[in-house]
Length: 269
View 1 (cartoon, one colour):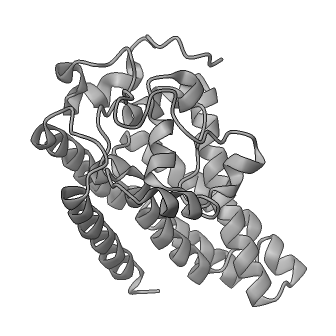
View 2 (cartoon, helix red, strand yellow; view 1 turned 120 degrees about the vertical axis):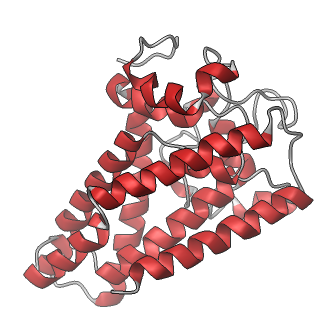
């Protein structure tokens, strides 16, 4: 467990570099905005979030899993499920929990205020995967830790899930052109860049679909799956219709965005 942070960092950097390289060689869409400007803003947010997490909740997900294991607290420990069953079910339920969390951030205005920071990106690439308001990051980690304790998920499963989730988030946000047959085949199991790009459409009916980060089954199961965008992938607009100007999408402007009046016509309570 002591090397957990190192493992995660290595896999994260590996996924980031590989997907960034493929983006460069096989981009799906032409860039609408300056990559230099976007990368500067997104990387600044990523670095800030990393620092804030280290100073606050830290590796709370793994810590929660280790504590639950030591105390034998959680549903799986009480049911005394076998390691294979509890690991497989735990992984699936964690992925579903992330899907549910993502869904609720679009339905509850308090959380949407935070989550809209992620959706203001006018292009999508590997850096978009971690473009989140720091408060949303901290709340997300606390929520995940609570799920882990309630279920009693094994620490190794949590570490594996965190690695997979990070790599998948980078992959699904990447501006990668996959062969259409490969994309169609992958979608039966996992989310693809084309599938998730629809979620970042300016059209609300498309934004309110394809919530998955890793497994695609949840969107199919809960009837939130959209196959293709209303406009084709090359022409579709990304981001939010009310936030289109770069000055309003700067680093400090994004940090203050949740406190501003909601301008969106999105139907949220």
